[in-house]
Image 1 (cartoon, rainbow, N blue to C red):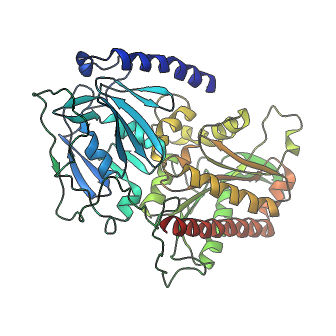
Image 2: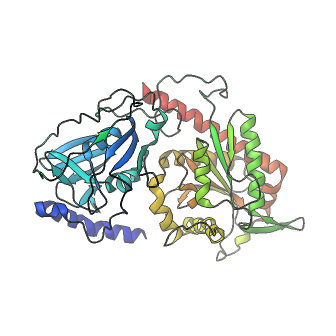
Image 3: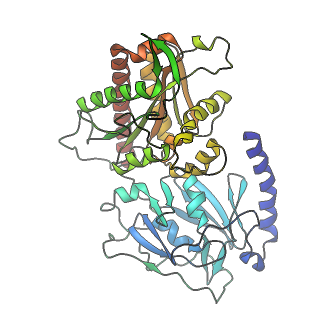
Length: 475
């Protein structure tokens, strides 16, 4: 797959370069044949929840699914927009940038081209881009910008959480464009409506300070301490604990202990409840996505955590040896994953094993293609990959210190269960159910106590590190 992606990038790069050279006025209305436009929106506007709070922005109808005013969208989402030439612009969000050019149906990103549903359009000196730029491309930067198609809404998670603290953008008086360009008199100017509840204004060039309420985003320099907060933390956090599998999906069946085969769904539920008890005893709130032995579809577990405003998402599983391994029953140890493209065959194998639950989910339609393709298409909904990697390392280190088997390290793969959790999210393969020593440790009272304490220690260490980083960033 990696070779295919590399080949695609190499193929698109010269196309984009050529397009920049030969772009013409006529090209502004042409959409590339391979970039199918999205379904039509329910109206002529979209909602933006950004640094200005809740704002409605006009969507100009077009064959490619609609265009939005670039400078307004960038300001509302806390980014920057720079002019590179009379007809070229760079748009940046938290260090990630794309380049756009008038009349060209591509966006340049990191040296390769991303096809757009239709070309960039300039009217009366104002730049309009396909909605796709903010519904598909920018969300993939992992900077907290997410597109919710069900509501036709672009959300900046940090700004929404700080609605009362973040100043607004004067959307009704957009800044004049920095460079003149060709006009199209038949293209109307956009209508931007700011609700009465929106806060006062903020310059677009000053990115919004993200909230202290979401780990992985910046926070004020001196956060107030919540009286109910655990010692060493400024507030009371909520952790979502997800017990893998359940109900008609038993997960992998491990070895036989005391005449009973180790069942992943039952074992992960026991570990999840022990972890819940440990976290609560230390002053944190806990959400169990599966508090009993029943099946919860993978694409509903993240939203359960989102609805409860959880700050972290921890999914617990037991591993199984590859049937093709020689002496697979001897393989043991702990490994921790975060959501990203799998790099090795074994990472892909583990993801496929955990994603296989979709065969039980009769009411869920994961879409066409393989499970990894589904996750990667949905990866724009996850805004905290870097923080997830940090959390995964801390949990891995803490568990490895108590685990009777070896540390198998931090890994990455396309897990469906992590794809819709809008917070730092990890999946822990606590041990191998197919190994007698690992299974005995995970099923024992002492082992589950060690697991709960180790993960809790890592969670607190992560939260303390997070608060120190955010305070430093706010100075």
